[in-house]
Image 1 (tube, rainbow, N blue to C red):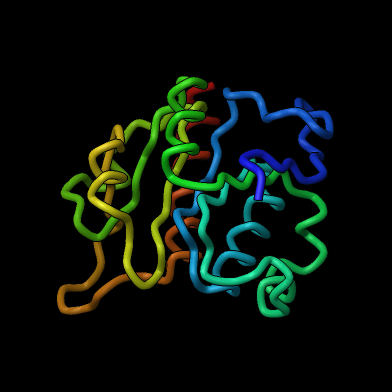
Image 2 (spheres, rainbow, N blue to C red):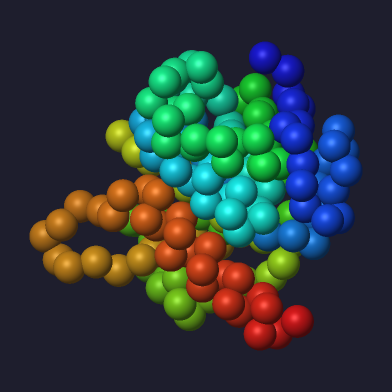
Amino acid sequence: MSEFRPARCFHPDIRPGLTPPFNIMQIALFQPDIPQNTGTILRLCACLDLPAHIIEPAGFAFSDRLFRRAGMDYLDHLSLTRHDSWSKFQAWRVEKGCRLVLFTTKAASHYLDFRYAASDILLFGRETAGVTDEVVAAADARLVIPIKPGLRSLNVAITAAMAAGEALRQIRSNG
């Protein structure tokens, strides 16, 4: 795998083969391991015109039929960058000056109280294990979507949709 593999890009500010501009909110998935969730989140990114990043290793092959089925033909309308490792993603992100906003069940800050910026990268962890301590330490903000006590978590695709919706609402009302 190479560090940067752009997919076909259809955002008006992006031409195929170029990295996305950094004034567009982006979504990143840390080592996703459920192909249906990843496909659904990438479909969300395609529909909302948000660039997406996958931080490898993923727990499935991108040829996996469940991944392709969940993403459907929307994957052809997506700016997708795959990074070989966390360290390569982190170096890229720091170089670009993007703020990293981690969504985690272990955060104390409510996602509705946070002030999002257009250059944010919303990061979601592995469904079965979350993220590593190194990733938590690197995050500029750690946010939670509160749920009923006694329950573990929301599905990651639902969390990504809620987070992206709130972030886009704020960015568009402030811009």
